[in-house]
Amino acid sequence: MGSDKVLSIKSNILWSSIGSIIGLSCQWLISVLVVRLSFGFSDAGLYSLSMSVYGIFFPIAQYRMYTYQVSDVNGENTVGEYLSFRLLTILLSLVLTFAYSLFTCRPVSVFCIFLYGLYKSANQLIDVLHAADQQFSRMDYVGVSLALQGALSLVFFCVALSCFRSVPLAIFAMFIAVVLVGWFYDLPRTSALTSIVVGISRNKAKRLLITCLPAVVAGIAVSASSSIPRQYLSSALGDSALGVYSSIAAPIAIIQMGVSYLYNPLLGYFSKSYSDKDRRSFFRLCFACLLGALIIVVVFGIGFEVFGNSLFSFVFGDEILPFMYLVPPMIASAVLTGLMWLVNDLLISFRYFSYTLVAGVLMFIVSLSSMKYSVEVFNLNGVTVCSLISCLFGLVYMVVVLSILLRRHFNNLV
Image (cartoon, rainbow, N blue to C red; front, side, top):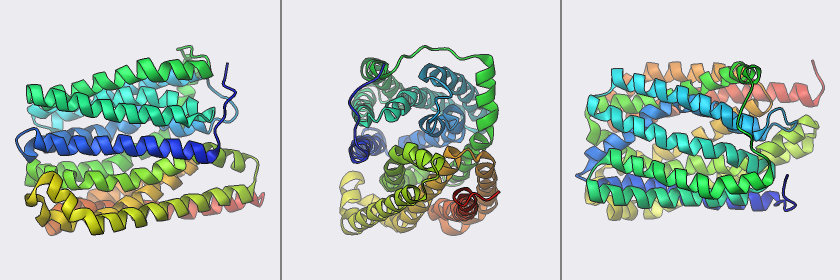
């Protein structure tokens, strides 16, 4: 099967960016409305804690398969095989999330964390279909899907929270919304591009598990390096402190995600230029990514500087204004994190998995070592300081390694 219509690079980036911005904006509105529709920052802290704890095991569910799948230029596996493999990794991540939350979180938080894991699992199944859409240069499907998921999740969340005053039930409502989008929108369109036969052989599953394991462990380490400091902040200063921090951090995260959604549509082109040893094309793509990231940073940086206080005051009330000092370091952290994931994904696209593992472990060690001191000295800003330090270590290491590997590859050195 397949489609005769193929979108240009610019169209793919545009569709992906628009859908992503809508989806991210809806996610931010959820973090806002969880405060407005409930009883203050405590529910926001519970919601943020759910995100942080599941974020530790999210890399297991993802298993870095999106990057692997879109860079699969030789057709190693079918969409159905990637989908089947994702089901296995999702199940494993949910089991680990539940077990971890039982031992490290208060009982009232465990159920909420597990439901959030279900919600993100539905996102991850659709993600496999999006990777297939990207391979066929049909990221208009991806953009529309991301927008629908964001909008329906927002509506379902608000209705459930307003009616039942329960964050867990509101999260479960989001899960239902995403399932509906996947079943009625994504599946029919991806099925029109390529056949989807669910199932994967034991050998193929084993090979994917082993091949991508270093990158997955790296992803867990990177996620933990940012999630555990947030969990520590909640334990040390309470759910309200984490709620305040997360409420301000949510819109800043759009910068980081904006960078990732800028380069995601280009991963297949990066892999093709690397495979063809097309140095000029490769570095033109690198320049485009860096230029795009710079534009995103400048636009959002100026926007927050000019409108930040008014925006946060309007959304959260004047009680949030004393915490606006958190914004500048958050912007710096978002930029570094976005660039770090770009270099990380390039290493995976070129199948240099072991180097991502070293970088991830390095970031985790640095984060864990600086976490307690950072929060004690910098209070709420300690989480950001911890993230900045660990991300800088990982980014510098991966840039140096990637530079050496690219020089050898393009110059045909052993």
